[in-house]
Image (cartoon, rainbow, N blue to C red; front, top):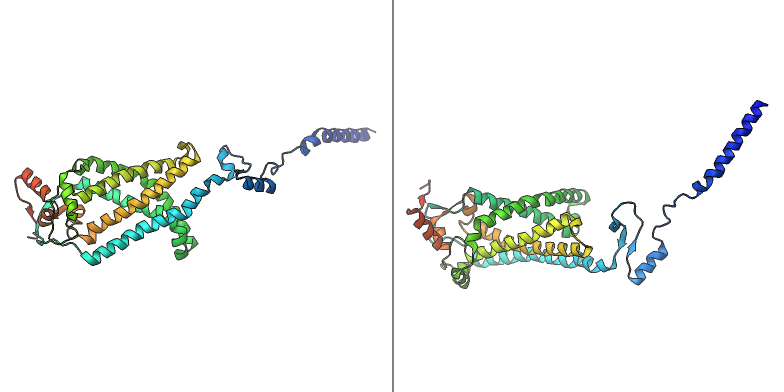
Length: 330
């Protein structure tokens, strides 16, 4: 009898439990109840409205699937910036190749004198090479973001491209900081020498002596061409730095439109500055005899200095009261 009563109590308890909790079990949240339906999707597309979905993270913007107002920006990323970046780089290389074929390497008319003049000290060269090396990596990794999938991916395959892009992104994010430090350094070191003056006008009238052999317009430590490059790097580098920080920390940007604007300015500035730097690299290497020494050893041949920076040579000799030191090989 006791056993039967125990079984009845258990049965009644089970019934009460099911009766109390079954409705709550049946009322569980359907995870797809608030998701985008096909009908809602087509309604939004037809009216030009945004298509959003249900998310479980605090960032409400993550639920935005399609924003019609972004189509113009997306088209620019996939077409316009792609074209501009290619033409900026390939176009400048083509122009410099043509210039080299016509003009050839710009030689020192008086030949090497064997006497050296200190042009840039160790700190100046450190700032220059830090800025140059970081910019090259930043430019290549940034260019990969724009045209890598269409140009590089078919050449090296998905695995290599994925690895390269991942490391490129890391390099782009972290090398931006030494780039900005070096940018500040060159401003502090050289801004006083890059103030435009009347001498620059004459230099430009004569094409800097680059177009015709035997023409050597006077110039101070930096000629008009170098001043153009300096201010292009300073202003362009500042624009890249500001927009880059905004892209690196998107929460600092108020709206999607601001983010898109900064991204577009960043890409256009990078394309223009890349073309200018390619021209600078050309002149400082294969384009002009003796030019690389300025940033290589820091010392340049006296005849080179007299032909390209005659006023600067006079200033140096006036300050030291002595001639340039002989080269050790002399």
